[in-house]
Length: 460
Image 1 (cartoon, helix red, strand yellow):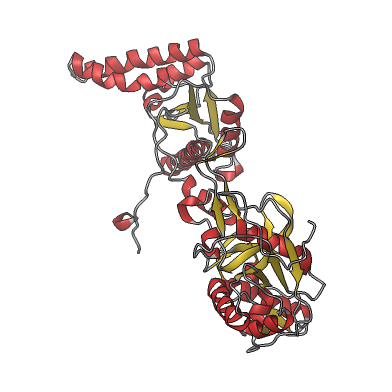
Image 2 (cartoon, rainbow, N blue to C red):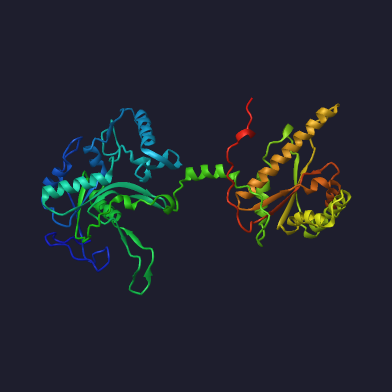
């Protein structure tokens, strides 16, 4: 930028634009004292910058606002104890922890500001102090603006800044955390560029641009905590820095890493829903293989591996097995005295195993099971192995669900174990425990609301 003399008024920007299409000037305010609680910040700025005039925007580092407002906390001189206090203050200032990486915390405070360490800072203060952000940065900006206007007689804007990182870019920049007398956002929605393209969603964070530009003059080691931006014509629209915060449903990334992981863990189980209609889309082999691998981590007795999942990858063999089971089921229902229309209706429920993109059959394999001389313990051993297979089946259903793959467990193979073993050429001691229809859901179901355990959780 080529700074003008500063003696002339600001140039009007092009109609409807936040930029000036002309030079602007950024002036440091030098000679300011070291501020302490109760100091008159506005008086000090007015004395150091008697040249303030209408249209100037006074950009102030939040640290000196914090100092004047008594937001400085005494801290131990010992570095470890000081850091322990810093972490305690972060917990008190933050309302949410969005991400953790090593010792770095990204938090949101009660005003919605998202930044490292809730703004708790140990730079540019004494070694036995820590600084908190101003209690209400927008209110601080409004007070300072009124005091500066009273002292200087000039119509000014005020922007209070703090340093922040950016999620997708390296490095930090100053951003506006408090503002008064400055339009913090400029929307171009509905405007057209020089090529006739309509600008649908372009919105410029004007106050943040001012904060970042002023930091080029203030720096971090210069001892200059205040700068003045001159040459912008920005009509006051009454907005404050709070408008810069995107929260709730408007924030595409409102869940931080920590929260997303926590929510994912809580939702994994409720995401498992029985899906009975599948989209015409194949399930990638690696998706099924990885889900099975996770399922095989389910607990098992005696350090055994009593589970086998048989993937009916051969469509002809699958059809042969299902036809065989269907015929056996029809025969059983007819022997039970069910009328033909009832048999047709009940047998039709098994159509899902024909239609599903993939079918997997879980088996109990008694490898490693203990032998007992009495039937009671033998039955208990078998029950224990059955429970282990059931755990693996549920683990598979959940592993598929978290990959957005639907599934439905059907118990039909339990009623035709011999036919299953014969058709699939499997050992005589393998016990089928149902069948799992697998595929991408035609209409993804929402996570189930588990509700309270109620009287199904019994305490004794």
